[in-house]
Amino acid sequence: MPAAMELIDQYIEDNRDAFQQDLFELLKIPSVSTDSRHKDDMQSAAAWVADQFRAIQFQTEIVPTPGHPIVYAQSPKIDGAPTVLVYGHYDVQPPDPLDEWLSPPFEPTVRDGSVYARGATDDKGQMLTHIKSAQAWINAGKTLPIQIKYLIEGEEEVGSSNLDGFLNDNLDRLGCDVAVISDTSQFAPGKPAITYGLKGIVYFEVFLRGPRQDLHSGTFGGSVANPANAMAKLMGSLVDENGRVTLDGFYDDVLDLTVEEREQFASLDFDEQRFREQIGVSETFGEQGFTTLERRWARPTCDVNGIYSGYQGEGAKTVLPCFAGGKVSCRLVPNQDPDKVREAMKKHLQANCPPGLDLEVICHHGAPGIVVPLDSPYVSAAASAIEHGFGVAPVFIREGGSIPVVTAFKELLGVDTLLLGWGLDDDNTHSPNEKFSLGDFHRGIKASAHLWNEIGNI
Ligand code: BES
Ligand code: MN
Ligand code: MN
Image (tube, rainbow, N blue to C red; front, side, top):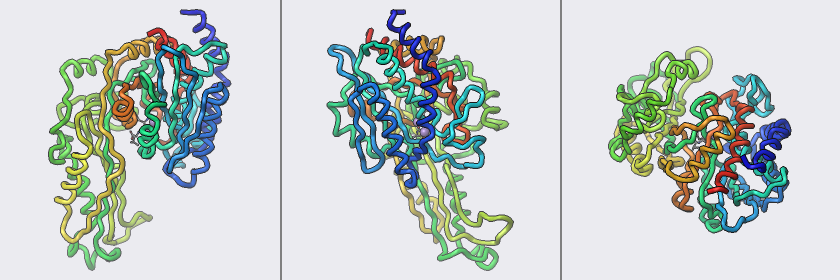
């Protein structure tokens, strides 16, 4: 290992506690992007991130948007050397349900070597590894061998609606050779992964309106369509008993798994029983003919995210509700067209809505699925860097989550993304008691510092 990297590794070792303290500072800011009461916190989080870059004299800008600000920063240009674009997000999901947290979501607390806080793994902790690694290079007195550009947004959890505008307005400035995102997971503890496929998504809200107001369910029940019954049936009709999505043409364009890929998934020693125990179910369920990993990583799905109607209070109340609401999303795989799925969903809901009810469908964000090529020198560089940071070579996986900007980077900037996940599947992302392993935070910083070196050597 070159002497420079030894110095940098030592710096990272010596500053383990200081880096953690900085992470805790960021985790204390409740930057919940979907909740307008946190607008000021969003500004504070953006300012905190910007200060990290200013501390190492990177050219830094807080770019206002109609929503939450984007933080953009870059290190000095190195002639003839590659440029890397790091993407991350400082916004987090709402912490609800609050009473299920063992420690308050915005008071980072260490238990069993992990820090518990909303945003710990998604994405503050993971994102910060790529900032701390640059700080380590510079504070250890070394010159970065490549140029690094950072795009840290505050609207990822709400669909990144202002990001495309920023990308389009800054195509030249964002020019790069490869993008890097750490906002995914390892395959298992101690088994770091490079993710080469993500799902896309289309998201809907469905409203069913019936009588003018709630009615006595004895007096009126059976004589008019009940919006709650109808919503349950509509939502229930989206997936059949074989786990297949029923929308017309849903599977037409699906990019099927290759034999090689199925073999490769099967060769990862995925522990079904541990999986069931982790999520607390006695059996798994999904599209027939596919394994759990295939279903999770490479088959399209449809899930109700929420459903609400009628009496929610204690005990029984005999009432025929006048309204029902539902939130439902489809996860898409490569080749499926979000617009086509959107139309198929609308048609299906309209065709299956009982008479006498008024149906309204709202479409939220949409993005296609993506796979990125593995035969590039950047992937090899990332694999070596991970080996330096984690002590083992990464495995190659796909994941079921969505990061729409990966598609945007390909389409607008013409670059592929390295998805280097430091998280774990049981980090409770979007759930109560979100956590991030402090060991992985440390190893992630080390891997990232080596990534700049490895890419500089390409
Ligand atoms: N970090 C996740 C994406 C992710 C989750 C990737 C799990 C791989 C595995 C990201 O912050 C996220 O939550 N994305 C949303 C996208 C949506 C808001 C457009 C998602 O997947 O639900
Ligand atoms: Mn994320
Ligand atoms: Mn998320």
